Image (cartoon, rainbow, N blue to C red; front, side, top):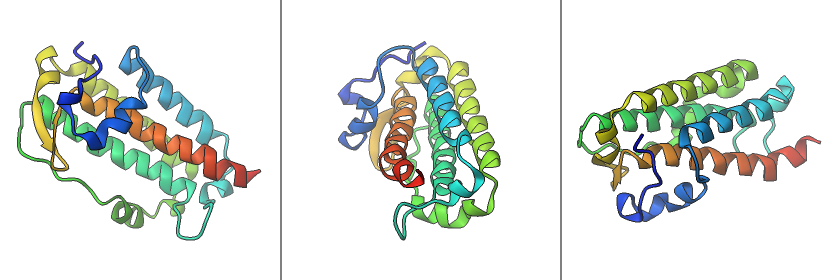
Length: 175
């Protein structure tokens, strides 16, 4: 499969930190392992802990999990569009607007986790379904040139970023 690590010429500098957060190896296995990591982290929380915010105005843990699901779907849509050779520029998205509209705190933590896991499994299935040549297709997302191959790396790096924030800023306050 053409999911070898992208070269810097395949993505804009703004994505470099996400790609750099992704380890070497079988990317689909890395994404599956990350799903298990998310499941372990959020599965260990009590329902009431899902509403925890480490500071006023910050997202709750439920908001963060919903954000991971929303971003997963948006990134997967980008894989689909670019992977099918559609070079129509794709816009970014305003994550705070999505979070406000989702009202994640009104949902059960277990349901939010199941939703994330379903979204990740759908991403993996999409990645497995693409023909080899699709990974080299180029397009524009968030006003930056990118190949299809970069997007699963961005998915991993984006989630890794938020998992690090959770461990650093949220979990210490829950103890």
